[in-house]
Length: 209
Image 1 (cartoon, one colour):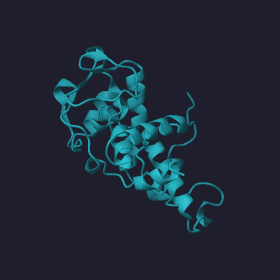
Image 2 (cartoon, rainbow, N blue to C red):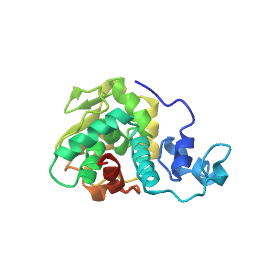
Image 3 (cartoon, helix red, strand yellow):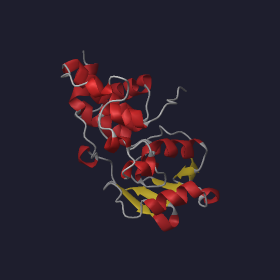
Image 4 (tube, rainbow, N blue to C red):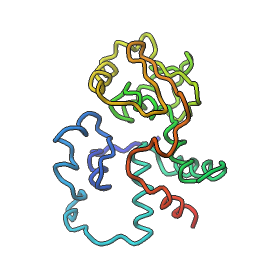
């Protein structure tokens, strides 16, 4: 699978918003968006032209892809699934992405970033309903219990992530039991649970051409 190997802070600067790709650093004054709020590159400071409609649509798609760490082909498959579901396509797309196991692990504060959560899942450190799941794209269901494997609970990155996130709330559709290294999906996520700024209708327009 292709991987982005350059500085992820460049992605935040390109989208002119925090995508929370760097873990705890995103919450400090060292955040690249806080220090340099213009796009990366030689001509970054001069990129001030007004985007046409297509440009706006493309930027929204790129933003969501980068937040969840998904490549184009996989993102397009999610969109097709969202189209086939009942309801509003854009909202279906976002709530489906929220249900990805790597995102849920991040939302439960077992990892400091989605990239770190993805690595933990791939290495077999997480369980769903007491069964090991090593597929980051696995979609959790209502009532599902996500837990850190017994042998992995002493991992420093997991303990550090929980410690750093002590004062942060988990989304309303999840419940966490940090002492037991467990979390539960108490209901399916809704559009209101997704707090980062995104205009999903622009993504729908882009793929509907």
